Every structure is written in C-alpha cells, then in structure tokens.
Length: 395
Ligand SMILES: Cc1cc2nc3c(=O)[nH]c(=O)nc-3n(C[C@H](O)[C@H](O)[C@H](O)COP(=O)(O)OP(=O)(O)OC[C@H]3O[C@@H](n4cnc5c(N)ncnc54)[C@H](O)[C@@H]3O)c2cc1C
Image 1 (cartoon, helix red, strand yellow):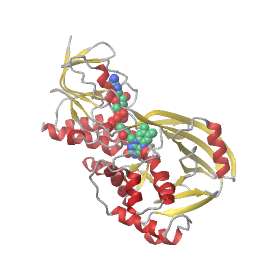
Image 2: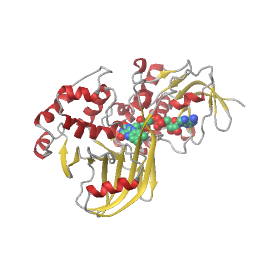
Image 3: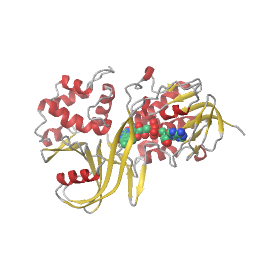
Image 4: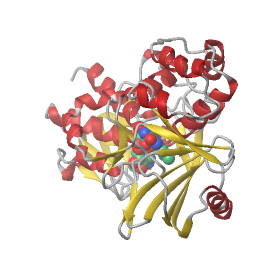
C-alpha cells in the first residue's frame, strides 16, 4: 500500500534534526530518513576503545547565534580551549593569547618576533569592521587594511585554513568577519563525548520512531519518494538536506542547480603520544608547513595525550609522523590509532551563499533544500538554514 507522510525530511544531520525539532514544537507530523546508521550526518564521532574520535577536527563556538533556538545547548559539557594559540616558527614555539579576550596577556606574552604593534592593533580595528560586500577578497582586504604579509601568512592563513579548509581564504568576506569576531569573543571547545553529542542532544526531544536510519532514499518524484525497500511514500512537503539528493530527482523536476557542487577535503590523524612539556587544550599552528596545518593535545593519563592532527593535503602518515617528531623532540612513544580522509568536508559556497537572499531553496512547490551548502558551511549555518526555511513557511 502507498503510504503518506505530511512532511518528509531526508537527512538526520544537524539541518534535518533542526527541521524536525521545529515541526515537533508545532506538533506537525514528519518522518526523517537517513542512509547512515547514526544520526548527526557530518557531526560524526567514532568510538575507539576509551577514545571518542571526531571524524575531522570539529569545534563548537558557544556564541553561534543559531544556538539560541535550542536553549539546552547551554547545558552541553564542553572542553574549552585556552583562548589563543601556539605558533611554531623557525623551530621555536610562541604562545599568543587572544587580544580581544585577554589584551594584557596578549601584549605581555606575545613575544612572537613577526607580529608588529601595528598588526596587533589592527586586530582590534578588524573586530569593529562590518562589510556586506560579497565580492571583496579576504586576503586583499586584510592587506589593504594594513596587515603585514607575514602576519597574514602566520596568523590569518595559518589559523583560518583549519576553519575554512582553504589556505587562500577564498570565502565571502562577510562570513570571514563573522567567524573572526566569534572566535575573538566567544568560548570555543569540543563537546565531551565528541561532536556527535550535539546531534544526540537535539534528538533527545524527538520521538525516535520518527527517525528511520539505514534507509537510503533512491528516487524523488514530484509528490513522492522511493526508499531503499522500494516503498513509495507520498508527501505534502519534502525537505532535502543534502545537495546530492537532486540527482535522484525525476527529470520533470530536476533543474540541475547543484550538479557541479564541489567540496574541500581534509585529513585527520589521531595519535596517542607519550610526551612531556606540551600545552593541552590550545591549538598549535604551523604556518611554514605544507604537511601539518594544526594540532591539538588532550591529556588522557600521566604523560599520555590524544593528539588530533589536521592536514589539508597530506595522505601519508609517515610524513605526518616525521614532521611531528621534528617539532616535538621530547616524544617517548607514539601510536597512530585512527586516520580519516574526508573527501566531502566543507562545500564551496560561492554560488549558493545567500542565494536569492535566502539561506534555503524552494525547489518546487513541495520540495525544499536546506543545509550548510546554502548558508555558511558550519553547524551554525546548517541550523540557520533550516530555521529560516521553517520560519518562512509560516506553518
Ligand atoms: C572535517 C569537518 C570539519 C568541520 N569542522 C567544523 C567546525 O569546527 N565547526 C563547525 O561549526 N562546523 C564544522 N564542520 C561543518 C559541519 O559539520 C557541517 O556544516 C554540518 O554538520 C552539516 O550539517 P547538514 O545537516 O547541513 O548536512 P549533513 O551533516 O551532511 O547531513 C546530510 C544528511 O543527509 C543524509 N543523506 C544524504 N543522501 C541521502 C539519501 N539518499 N537517503 C537518506 N539520507 C541521505 C546523509 O547521510 C547525512 O546524514 C566541519 C565539517 C567537516 C566534515
């Protein structure tokens, strides 16, 4: 028998879960489908013995504006980072504190030779800037503001390549400033239990019978979908949260808008390292390296640390290991426990950012798209996209 469900959501990532939460609050019927065996989509955490390993180094900025719609996020236990970073330059490490949150510490502690007083003061000027233009190039903008080439390379490119997965910072300037300001003033960290805890938290208020995992949608028609068991289910509204779903559309409705969407890749290595004299809970940056872009130590027991190493392009563990040992001479032992090659990490958004001044797309009269690819590629963007969509539907 052909089934009918008023609202179908494809994807139990953060965007799909947000749609479900907002429909649940309005007591509107829905069903979520996901091809994966877990909720969370890209917010994925894998258990490895005693360790919770996130698939890709993923952090939460506590002041993400979209978090306001879910007050319970305030209660999530987060291992906060020290606000600032440690930079490796010419084989030395320098600790640099956040100038907005800790101006005195910043001026006192930041002995890094390449950062001039002018560069430091310009960080405050940048904090006060507000730019809406879509077409200004970030690096050119920073150069025109007066930042030195060294500072742009050693701080901006080095730090934000890990956030945007792009060393050249080719992202909308408005988005760059938004993230820069959030990092400057907000607490940042990783949920205890891993990034997937956020998805679990949001799903706690959903009826688990309304989430069908391990069920891949294989066809999308104007008024119905077909699932992996060949069931046809008709809908009043369909919410798609992954651009690849367009390829499942019937030719009559497929307008091929997402056909060429591209993604940035990243590599993530988890090591257990016995080491002394390092700092935990602060991000280490390596502006001169083409192998390791950043890393992060979290203490486990004694001198044993879990180290998460991020690289934009290195798929060879031996290169990672050799470079790590060259930076940290005091390593007593080291073991690789997991590595991830994430091919579809963050979407390039040049075409879709604020597409027609919206952060979602009304694809047909009954089919909608939301997700990070239509907003900013982040947890905040995914929630914001879904929230704007449901708000505009005025259900
Ligand atoms: C390595 C990495 C690092 C990141 N770092 C950060 C960070 O530090 N901070 C931050 O805020 N954000 C970060 N992000 C971005 C953030 O994780 C994503 O923006 C967000 O999780 C995307 O959520 P979404 O719901 O839009 O999409 P997704 O999570 O991709 O959800 C889409 C869902 O649709 C499902 N699906 C697709 N096709 C089908 C089908 N045919 N049938 C059924 N289900 C289907 C998928 O299985 C998936 O679960 C990072 C992402 C990655 C990958």
